[in-house]
Image (tube, rainbow, N blue to C red):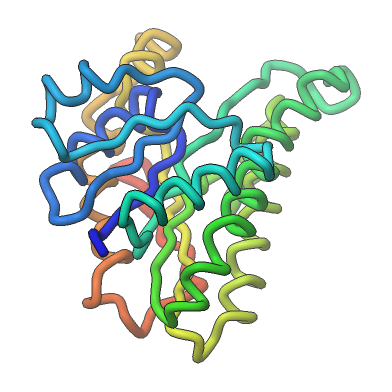
Length: 235
């Protein structure tokens, strides 16, 4: 069986950077997004390094179909990076619409739940595996998220899910951890905060290296961690 690393949210700015980083490794990157072009990925990373899959992360049927496909094609998912998510804010809670509230829960919590429920059975059957969830500093520092309460609440709930799941998996050989980045240096964030000091933000490659460590055997005794990746914003 060939090693595979599942990566959700692969089409975004951070997701693309993570695909590029992990495509250099020894596992095939299963890049999940609603729309990805295999030819473009092959041209950028080399043929056979990635597999583009269009998937609605909230679809249990879609996850089952993916699992069956990977098994048929000889892939064994040993690791995963759950990087799908989103941000909406700008209003206090009393003025936050149901649309924004549900969108934040869907993109930042439900995607994690569905992904874990889809990936864990296979890892548990094999007795090994490692998953890293992309959290946010907002989960640990919600007082800094005024006017983005829906986002902060969803990220905090996601972290709670990671840590309770890690406790359930103790002794199984399967680990689940989270990274909590502050502002990530992406084009969208630069456009949204043009007057910020970008040198204080977290570089995507730096975040990728932290994720890679948690996935690695070097972190074999770490599960349920919430690793701060704060750049130079705070400690």
